[in-house]
Length: 569
Image (cartoon, rainbow, N blue to C red; front, side, top):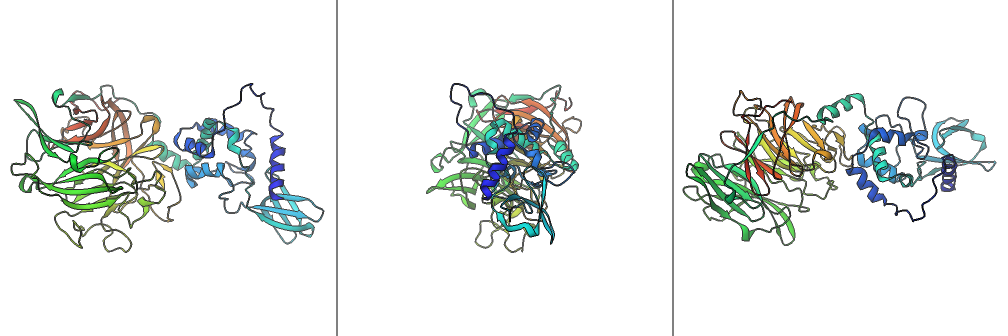
């Protein structure tokens, strides 16, 4: 009876809507599934202004059941700060599957009277003498207790099933965007400050000049860096081939020689292969260097950190067997990190992604018993407990039960490229996003950077949110219209007289946009588009002097020349 009564009330409201246009002679396209609407709403950018119009239209009846401003209570939950309370996915699910999760205090009650009438709504008040319900029409109904024959709790939400069916997918995205935009003013201000609507371009873009002869083009290069203590000598990692090349520049021209070939020992394809390299601080003396390698072993995706040693003279690898420092079994082939950097403290920082699947449904990044979705800090000059490393004694979670002591920072999704500011020692991370935002963040000891509770400055999911946890927001986030794969870069610190001094330079793999930003206390001050790469960006490099380089995935290393550029609109 409850379901029948609900359908009758919905039908009564629907009858008041204007007549629809006559159907075209041809059959309309089939309605997309709920899952397709969900995917569209998560990934596509909606217009909150159009969404507000849809919210107030009779065809959705949203405004009848929900209030977005102060006023009398209605049958549905208040949505005055929906974007602060609920993640985008939760809002979408509530529209598509309204009876799956009903907000506390808004369960449906059915009252049958002794005269045979049935009323259904949300309890608005109850005394010994009466019960008051608010129905889907928004009107209160008071029923005397002496007239009540039976009172039932229903598992069916007052919100009608199939509301989405009357909306085009873009209209659905607009409605969702409007609901997400309903936030307290202070939170709106934070979002706008960190995700500016407009990013101006500099009047004079930077120059990207090929750093080597065209004949020395690389095959899918993924990392570039100078060999410590060797003027004009660099290493280049090729992602798919498993080769590391030694690039030497001198007055006689450029020279490219093979440093190491792991091709036969690597599984290739997708995200597998060579990913990153870090030289030991004493590389000139001990020849030690470390690689991030992703491979597949008997069907299992593996992320490894291995130690290798250069031959005397440091012109090629010694050929000695590698030492396995760290081995992590990944859930999928995605989000397995790829970068590793030594800090000024002599410890190795390793970025590890959540390893998937998409949206981190298992909560890896918030699970402190796992190394996935974390920044790790390791002492590779020692070993303890059967590990290939020791735990630095000042790591933030040393001695804590149910927490891995290697963890430096948690709540990361895919810290693909990160670097230290050589002046301030701030650790900058380019954090690859999920559906809507890419992030630039500065991470510090013991912090939680929010994934998958937050994406950018927006709630993503409450599934693994623990009350009382402090989440650190990024410095800057940009939406999909600007790109969908951030590549973290470096802070420029060569010439103090340059307008780029202290500017963090980074880009996006797919759109090839190149940006620079400045911050104070992790609050965005300025972000400008400073150029466009001729090739897809996969990494940035920095010489020991501090000059900046861009790695183009189509094979060219570019030097970023700032001499004639000005960081200003």
